[in-house]
Image 1 (cartoon, rainbow, N blue to C red):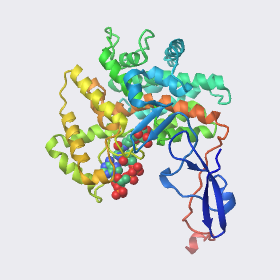
Image 2: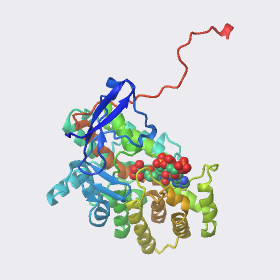
Image 3: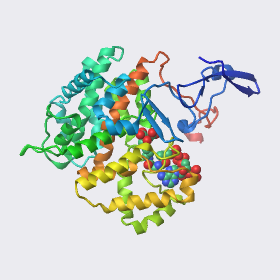
Image 4: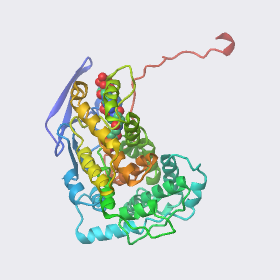
Amino acid sequence: MTDKTAELKTEGGDYQYPVLPGSVGPDVIDIRKLYGQTGKFTYDPGFTSTASCQSAITYIDGDKGVLLHRGYPIDQLAEHSTFMEVAYLLLHGDLPKKDELEDFSKTITYHTMVHEQIVHFFRGFRRDAHPMSVMCGVVGALSAFYHDSTDITDPTQRLVASHRMIAKMPTIAAMAYKYSIGQPFLYPQNDLSYTGNFLRMTFGVPAETYEVNPVIERAMDRIFILHADHEQNASTSTVRLAGSSGANPFACIAAGIACLWGPAHGGANEAALNMLREIGDAKNVKSYVDRAKDKNDPFRLMGFGHRVYKNYDPRAKVMQQTAEEVLKELNISDPVLDVARELEQIALSDEYFIEKKLYPNVDFYSGIILNAIGFPTEMFTALFALARTTGWVAQWNEMISDPEQKIGRPRQLYVGATQRDYVPVGER
Ligand code: SDX
């Protein structure tokens, strides 16, 4: 605890609230007693100054461009780790020993198949349904198949549900893609890595053997690492809020998928590539930057800006390096990459972006890589959801195990009509 306090002076009296320190980063003012003592709420639309929980999973320093997962910097994890190892780290708190990693990877591998009846869900969608609509629907339905892991009070069931979610997201995402192009689903193949298995289920066909390209496999695995978790972002907060009511984990993850879909959040990777394609040529960049600066124009540079990062998003740096690597490996010279580089250069030297501290975020370069690997734009956010499921289940488990946890129920500043009497329709 702490002896530091914050003082609040109101017309009804002066109050002191404890200031709680974290292991690193901003302190918090514990205002849990504020309404009971003052009869007032705090007001913070978008939660720009609100800590919703205590967490030990991910730390972000937006000014320094720092992102730590259980204390490990994202650039070190992207360089030296694997997505399976990062999934273990997020879920259990420490890097696994060799045998722990092997056991974890094997457990995940043996949960990658989905119930055969889930195949029929896909038949209900139009072939041109957006993959995120399919992911919302199919993941939400998983609770109908796994009743043996929906009791959130049982730690064993929580762990099994977490393993199932991490394991089945690649299978479901690959199925969503296959369904959209009219190709048959491929079953998981247990002798492949998590990411290699996903690439085969996505791009393989029954008619021939699929060879996983190790450079693409490494790049995809790194992209999953970069998207694994990110503190209390909108979709993670959605998962926590859904989970706070006791909803089953599959329903909570489906809620997270729905929130991630928005273009201001995970949908930005799809929107960013569409924007870069619309710009089309480096010579058009300046006019789009001018539009982004125009208060009367709703256009924003997709893949730019961030609520927390007021310096470079460390994930964007790794993503840019990966883009160069993948395009070189595939011998692709994508003009969109030149547009992205020009846009970044112009924007980062423009007074508006400097003053508002707008930098490329994780979504700015990811679409270029995913497009080069062969994913259609509509699949980009589904891939984000696949990777972020690991963070969502880690955060969900942490929330359920938190002794301070209770159902999330914010209040409001009411600005509607005060009480008035009903008027019969003939007298209005
Ligand atoms: C993700 O939270 C997370 O951690 C999310 C994420 C994760 O891993 O979970 O990191 C993933 O969602 C990354 C962000 C992806 N979204 C985009 O790329 C969409 C474009 N970016 C913006 O919509 C915006 O930057 C947000 C939504 C990301 C952040 O918005 P904020 O923090 O609410 O900031 P704001 O909208 O209040 O903008 C502050 C100012 C405004 O100008 P003023 O009203 O102060 O004059 O900056 C301007 C905005 O108009 N601005 C932009 C801009 N982003 C903000 N102007 C032009 N282009 C942009 N992209």
